[in-house]
Image (tube, rainbow, N blue to C red; front, side):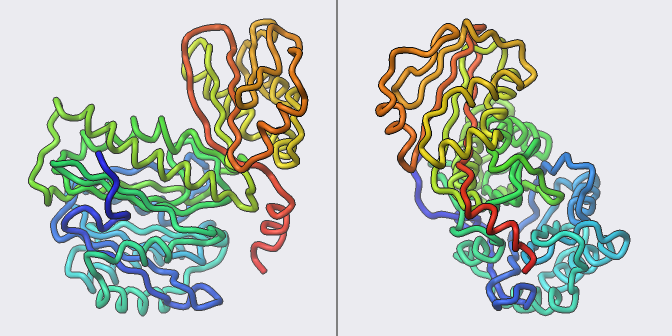
Length: 395
């Protein structure tokens, strides 16, 4: 498969746009609209936070009743519409109603995404105006503007697409902070022109998420709004049946992984992208627990920010991950430098270990020596700028 056009409109039969409706103070793009020419099968995964935003509650209800005939997704940035009670749900329904009116579909064919500050009521009148404008500017190459419109503290757009001879899959995501999913992460929409049943699409999505979005973290905070949607409109004419599901899942995982890694690279205040591989685990779940424990350790992340090869912090984080690890069986590498083996430090050169974590890309591998399972987690360092960004998020 080769990478060609980027974004949610690379697959046939999808139009999109991004407009400014006034939710953001700087009049930047803040409302994205995606519409399919035909009905779509749809699957979604959502935050496991017990505090869930109104759009999450709404979308889960829509998908439970109508996963085979979706037509549109609308997303706003600048307001999360979370912790807003019944009024927030009413605002979400009003948003879906307006999309249905403007694009000519039913309200139960519309999904709604929101991101921004928690506890603020959505300005529905501004959103209605934005939807009316967006409906007039939809285009088959409008995915780029849509990806801009969902950004909050992101410093760059996050898009990826693959094509093969049968179908295309393209996606966009937003997120730089409050990233520690146990489902998907932040906001992401993926489209494909393959034809596939909702049940098979859901199966493929959950398998893809387990290898991608569930393996990314910025600081260990899970959002109230995390949503990942995949829409398939069948415009390519190629149908994914049970026997083709493995190949389709592999392609979907490739797109999801690329988007997840872009999120980690753009972590709030990040200066370094960190890949953590944990091998030699009893099973993949244990490998993931250890890797996430390291990825979320403020001490590990700040040491890497300062290029301090303090490998003891990594071993320590592995030890409190809730897995019965044995230090005498562990081996740890910073890049190609083996710094710890069989419970004691090796005779490594500290300058080499420091150099291994000094660059913009850092690779850490920990072998637990307890089995054959391996997993990879992506994260970033924790810098002074992270504090600055989040200390003044609302102002």
